[in-house]
Amino acid sequence: MQLPYDRVLRGDLVLPDALLRDGYVAVRGEAIAAIGQGELPPAKQVDDFSGKLILPGLVDGHMHTGSAIGWPGIEGATATAAAGGVTTVCDMPYDVPRAVTSADIFREKVEAVHQFAHVDVALYGTIRKTGGVDAIAGLAEAGASAFKLSTYEYDAVRFPRIDHPTMVEAFREISKTGLMVAVHNEDQELVERMTAEARASGRVDPIMHARTRPPLAETMADLEIFEIGMETGAHVHIAHSSVARGFDIAESFRRMGGKATGEACIQYLCMTEEDLVRLKGFGKCNPPFRTQQEVELMWVALQAGKIAYVSTDHAPWQREKKLGDDIFACGAGLTGMQSFAPLMFTLLAERGLDVTWMARLCAERSARFHGLYPKKGAIRIGADADFAVLERGDFVFDETAIQDRPDARWSPYHGRAMKARVAATFLRGTPVWDGAEVRAKPGQGRFVPRQHRESFLG
Image (cartoon, rainbow, N blue to C red; front, side):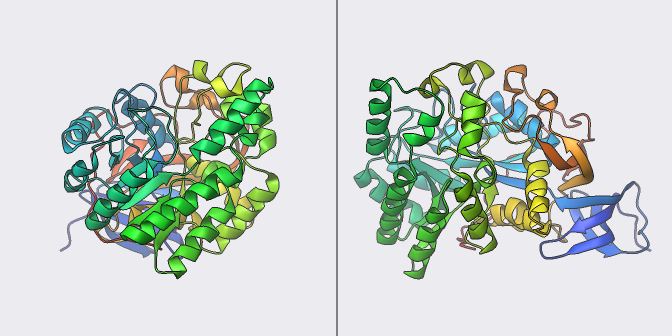
């Protein structure tokens, strides 16, 4: 006689390529043990979400927990992740006061994850501005899911620009690991010159953030990094393309035999320059919001299968750093974790697209690119029992409900109508969000090392 399962969830299951209405998923231990329809199998615990959607827990392939307040930021960022249906975050290495540039620092951050995290965490590694290439092999061995470098410098120690000769050397070493290298793609010379000219003319109003970081600044950087990828054999990935042409460029390099991909952050699928003017500092991110026409082109790229995955680039700066009349003095980055699942569902619904797009682009594909699949990213037997339960309806996103430290409770999506809310989140079979409160405790989340070295290009 088969022993009962530990837990069975009932609802409409969102599988990678289909919607299984009135289905069930059974959990044994921390993993998915059965998927089906009809009569529920015996279980110690039954969670009836009839009429609600059960998606794989989202995998955010790009976010920042430590850029504002250092590693203690892991606690709030992963709490708001749980409330947003995100069960695995891939955290960027540009932490305060030092970036993750060695295996020793990486292992220290893993311990911080085990102290603070509410959901599971994968980690990027990076290199120092000079002399850091020798650390690449050790970072990969320590379990990094990917590397991150930048063509634009925000801080010489924490977030440096890597010059071309060093980037060639680094890409060559990274290619030996099989991991992808994501690149912050903005041309520094162009942006600095245009920013200086704007300041000199007294133009520091919000729209100038977009005007001084034009699409050309991105596409110039894209061409540089993909050419270096062709030379070195590295899998090079645009960390965030705000323009559809970035994905076209990546596709052209793939046709030439290169390992070239790019992701879209969710804001570039819905926010425009008008939103930047309206939100001021609270709408500032890099790259900036584009035109409505560009948003439409981004959706064309998405439906054509050109986008690797959709991420948030969640960067919860303190509210005070987003205030002021000088847009250039405001911190660049948005909160987006708790709004991720409701917003993505809403954007798809508004365009008449199936929810399976969300399962693929916000869970399965991000897990594949980071080497976390098949452990993470899909409702499939043997995978971790990570689920996001969505209740469909008419809701309004409220920034005061964000599950993070008080000065991070702001959102560019405050007041936006949503077509769903996150009714529950499960991490490895355990409820971590009940629709009102985070039920996970700090330290319940775990570090998830990359599972293999195979490169995935989609």
